Image 1 (cartoon, rainbow, N blue to C red):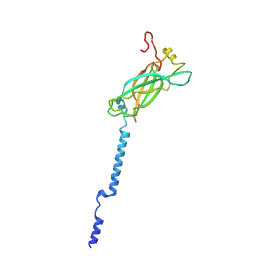
Image 2 (image 1 turned 60 degrees about the vertical axis):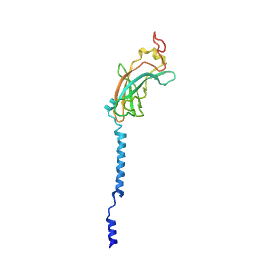
Image 3 (image 1 turned 135 degrees about the vertical axis):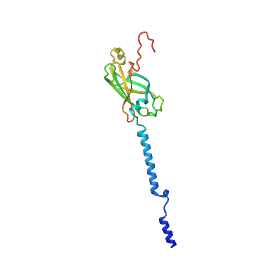
Image 4 (image 1 turned 45 degrees about the horizontal axis):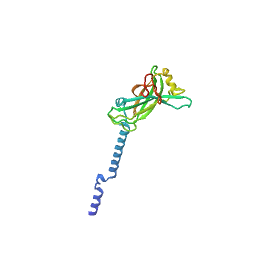
Length: 199
């Protein structure tokens, strides 16, 4: 009789919850779910910026412009506009992987001359910090027999300006500003009358 009672007791006695397979399976599923949520937040939600956030987070604090060589044919010179700039993170979150689209247009007519694109800020740029120089050049420009020929015909050289747009992950293109492109050619120094060389 005692043996039957002991057997009955073993069968009906409850196993502690932490020894049950179902319990640990549930814990594992919960952990996996939390990891997926964290990964989704960091890769999608946290990196996503609205157009307003992009506009409020990027400020151009320095810029320069010049026309640079584009080798097309050996018997002629081709120059294209180039724009170099630095940005400051004026937002509350680090900036990373920001695309910059430069539209070079004629100042008088507003017609497009060319455009250029670059993805910059590969490393996170903390709030309040200034980036390294970012360089963008156009695909098309002016052609002449030589670089000095551009200087001789400067009177016919139409003024160009650049519209620069920024685009972060999942945001639209946001206009950061419009800047003039100087009539300077890389490697050519123009010396005006009554000006000493090197100035």
